[in-house]
Length: 259
Image 1: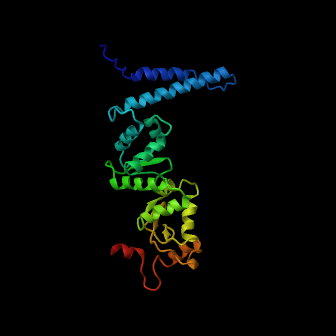
Image 2: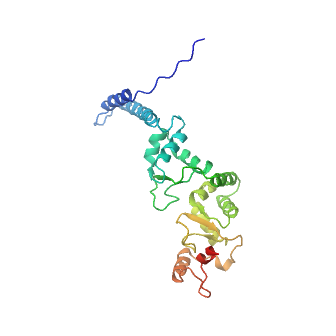
Image 3: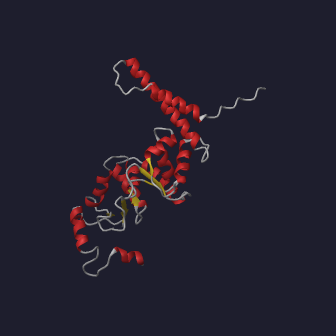
């Protein structure tokens, strides 16, 4: 029986030479002839393939996995608590849908990976892995969110279902976005408070301890109808005027946290 042939190892020098040759086919002059255009596109395809192979080669000291998700995680672990750009992760993963793999690491496996949606000091194209070990509680949160996401009904109803499940606990904006499945989830979340009386608090509506991308349902009791139409700007101005404290007894949210 003939033993299976082993796959040849990657030769980074040959790949680099191949990329250089393909780059030589790319003239700075624009072409109108379709044959020339196609030749250049194929050169770009070969360059992209070579780049992916080089990425795998240079990450071998970290991981030998061919799976994009494993390579992304290995790279993030090299730079724990340091911002990593989306362009870096695109190269490391070697796939177009690298963003989905990052989401899987965060929501399905419980890794604390923050983005510009969930951390104020990050750009929209940056990611940060806060801890090397995953958080099982976060992974369970995904299982809950995933079951709610599959429910029928409106995006608003799914957002409310997640908020009520975690009443009293802050939720990130991207978690609400995930279950809502609609672009207008922010407006719908606001309407839960202003039109239906659910006490959904944000940084601007009485919870300065929250980040700008966090929401929390403070109670399962709905506000009376006459309290539902206060505009956010007015609500925020009044809170700031009174230093986020009751004018009668001076109670504030910080005191409730200390108890």
